[in-house]
Image 1 (tube, rainbow, N blue to C red):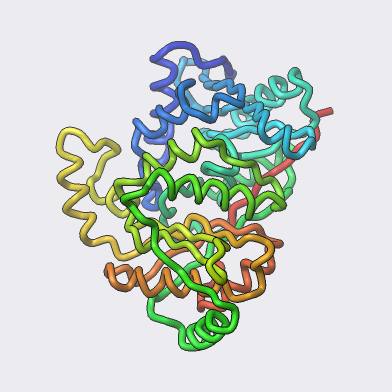
Image 2 (image 1 turned 180 degrees about the vertical axis):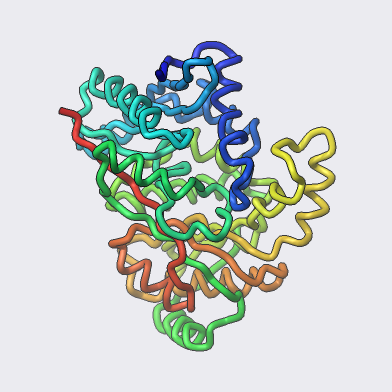
Length: 371
């Protein structure tokens, strides 16, 4: 017998956050998140909740032990942008028991149906601007920073419930930060022909630069499937979290004849540090360990790269990637990931593949009609 009930009180919130630490304790690829970061996202004070309604649920067995969790999400920003009837589920974690998984999904579906949604989509924790997608291919390596990880059998449990693929998200692996000779020649030639230049973020004017990124991000992705604009509060909150680990020359703006055309953002993969410090907390001694191990991070994740529509097919994306690769090498970063990219975004996938990267992980978003 499985009992699914809403999260109520601090003890339930702790149980919700703690569950993955028990479920994944024998998974060598799982990277423990910082509990305070998860708590921050779940807190009603997080900017996401200004335009969303969220309900968290815990599943308990007959003995009262927590065996699963899920979040049901009404994202008004998504509804206003897409009008597709989609509500979301996320933070899905479950013991290897299909009955528990189905009970959790039933509860989320009922919650969404009661709020007028005709589609349940996920997993997204909480939206496409945070961790989203279920890992369905590429289980042999740990996730990069701010990317999800899950057991292989999660896909089978979701699909047995009737959830079906709606979109795949692709992660690319860059095996070396050395300049690929061909892309270097092509990008430099296109840069000269089309008047493209790049510059790093100015950390002295961090707030102004973050606002530029927000405008570029929301404009460059506005036509993408599932894209939801980030509010000023949301991107400001994320920037504050990332600022301590940002390397200025791994945040690059592109200009075409002096006009802002796009940007790219990469950060060192601090998951390497979280794995090595051996726990999920930075206090009381974690910060010292983090700083020590941080010196040996040799990989990074390109979180986002966007080019305004008027400047696409002009070599801007390629030049941004080339600039990032060159900058990464200066910091001893010799490999990395670009993630994620929509499976049908042929233009961006081609630009990434032109740098010598290859697809190595697939994350899937699912839909189920709510009758």
